[in-house]
Image (cartoon, rainbow, N blue to C red; front, side, top):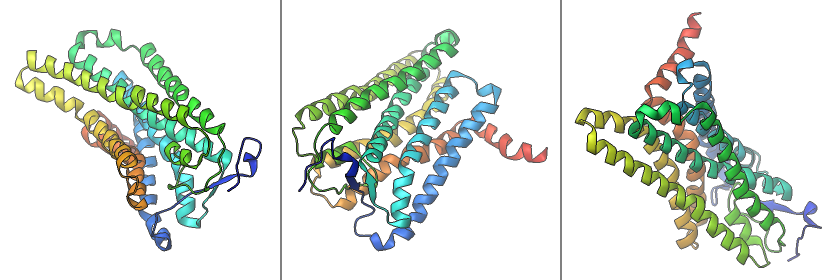
Length: 315
């Protein structure tokens, strides 16, 4: 097997995988995928449009929601080209540079999703536990700085992984096990010493995939403590109902994320179909479900969508 280094990478390519065992049915499988991508794109653009045109929604909570919608839109558009070209045209080759570009955006938006949900949990905490100081704590400037910090955090987290992987020689099979370029998939094809990459990946897991949920749990612990200590039964229900959309969004992200991690760690010899299904759920569930969750559970978003769709038609 030939070794590929930085001097020969221009002629190197990876081969992506569709749905293992169902290659003959790819054209039919493309229908649900196409529907899910359409729901994600239309849903997130609708949420962004409503937040932009409704003055009442120019508040920190909805500004964080617009960040989440932008992240979901980016995640969708990152995987859509390679997934659909495999299902529609059976184009499985992807160049070295294109694969690393997708790798950067795919993992960047995944980490961004977790970071935005962490920021939204802080917003819930301030709204419930410090309501009188909400406007002074979460100013427009603070929200903008939080968004910038999230972008910097995710870029600085992914770039070292990209450069550490790119410097290594690829000398094994070109075949990847997914329809997109994942770090844990690409590193299997490396024939050099990957110990430093593994340690960096472990540190990244601790700093983002473990720390973010722990901080979110801490914020909700403080919220519950505040609610149970001072609020009436009706106020408790109202406060928890206000956070329900965020809790559902957390479950939609972290349950598939844990499932994917457990599969890669403990089910390496499971059917390739299992890995592909879980990875697709992990990458498609949040962008598809988040706009639905917030449209159904958030009254202001629901009313904004109604005005956007029906009142403009009247005029």
